[in-house]
Length: 322
Image (tube, rainbow, N blue to C red; front, side, top):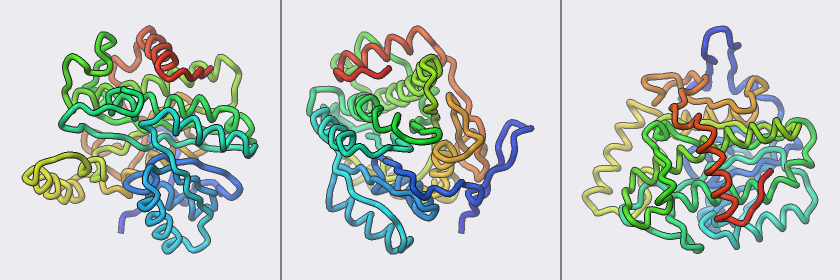
């Protein structure tokens, strides 16, 4: 069984384990894509600590199956299903409006769901390239619209963005963000993960400037054998190859459970700081039980590009965030 032991890096930072996770009783935590992969395993540990979980999923049947699984593993789990399609601004607006109108605070928002490298260019309900539209614009709009609920939370609310080591290969192409002229599956994914990280940093700067107690924290799972790696329109040969690669990743790289550790640290650890970015400390940040500060590519620190990206997201989604 995987040992949930975490040592923070660089040297000088204190050690943290899941056993040190503060009690989450009474805290409401929304996780997008909570029905599988890193999202599910993060939800599992949060449920063990007493959090009330909002399982934000696109498919009701799969969501209910995940909830049944969660309750089988954690009989006392407090969780509810939330149908949310991040590829639809209408769905995002409806869900956010309902949550805000309920008047209950939201303590943590974990923007975990994602689309990975469809072979062909696909579009969201609003005509955005699927990866940029879901991974970036969907979460940007959700965060903006849920801000009133986050602001109601006591203590220190958190917004956690799931980035990726793939951001290091990303480049923002402002002349063709939607890949209408040229689509490359991996290139669009790298761009979306770079954008997620840049927006997390920009959100932190804006929160600090506004004097808000909310923390914006980013994390990445290393290279984990998650559902993202297997879902999609692949040929039978590629599906077989991906399945074999997945088994190899379980052995040599991170499992889904291990990949959830940085998310849990970002969402709950007292040591996590606003503007921080955390990930595994093993080989090339791809695996390892240790979690610490992750390496940030230089392009993710471009302040002017971050501001331009922020403005672009507001214009495309119609959602104003700080």
